[in-house]
Figure 1 (cartoon, each protein chain N blue to C red):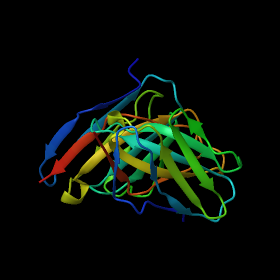
Figure 2: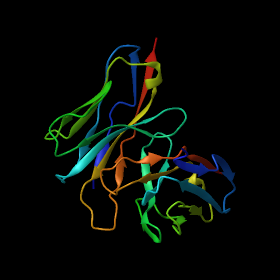
Figure 3: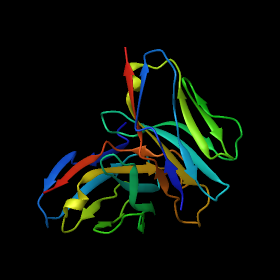
Figure 4: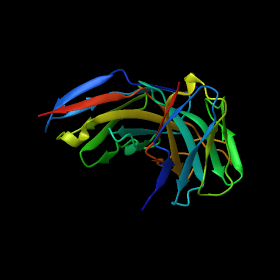
Length: 119
Length: 113
């Protein structure tokens, strides 16, 4: 079974600075997807960024980028120019790319990292 | 542009009571999911559906039932509520069943006392 580990329960960053959130995962599969989801106080989960395992290039979405190290099974999220609105819980998640027809693959979540943004 | 709508947002149940959490989507997505989020934990999959009339168990299905009679609706039924079912429940949808983005509702906070 796949597992996702986020070893930083809480992180803090000053506004306009850069912060990196860590995530490691364990899998024997070669085809999979990795995600970072943000959960603000409103509770609704929002996709931040997505990475396909077969792509060597790291995904980037505006101020958010990832460092995907497939051999090390590491998938960290870098937030540049941090803003107050970035304060939230961040969840790393794994999803298999292989499932029998007519089914859906399970999204496995880590336990989350709470990010505080200070002035 | 409603997306995924969950009702109610909050609910308190007594042990042994039953209730249905509602989830409706207007994105015409075939795949729908129910997750629960316990304090300090990530989300765990309860049930999912790949289309109307088709449902399947996730990681933690015990104590729950689902049905999918239409593309839009995917209600989650709790029978004989127990304190262990105190959690935040999220409904989500996706266009496909693999690497696609999930769209989440805003959650239902349920307490069983």
